[in-house]
Image (cartoon, rainbow, N blue to C red; front, top):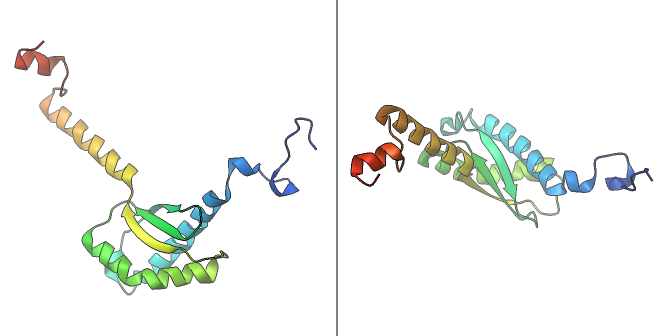
Length: 143
């Protein structure tokens, strides 16, 4: 055992188990496998062009996984729904899990939030005022 008294996961010189849990490793493997499979599907379904998987969020029991995309319109959701069984089959073939997770699709909330902040900042640049700030208070007579 090391002088610090901390062992490593698996006893084989790897990183401590707490620093990189299994679910994070599974999420990353699923992201890679599914991104490659979606790239292959673009040849047969143009609705999947320019889709980017930003993350995968897998439940603790690995039975469900949500793929998060940078943008997701109606056509893309429909195309992913049509391809769901092929995507799940790719996961079953390439990833060793007890169960193949049921896939669902969503737009990445971080991207949506970032876009909202950008829109607000663009509006401030055009207006030159900050909502609720001193200029707004002076304009409405409350400041």
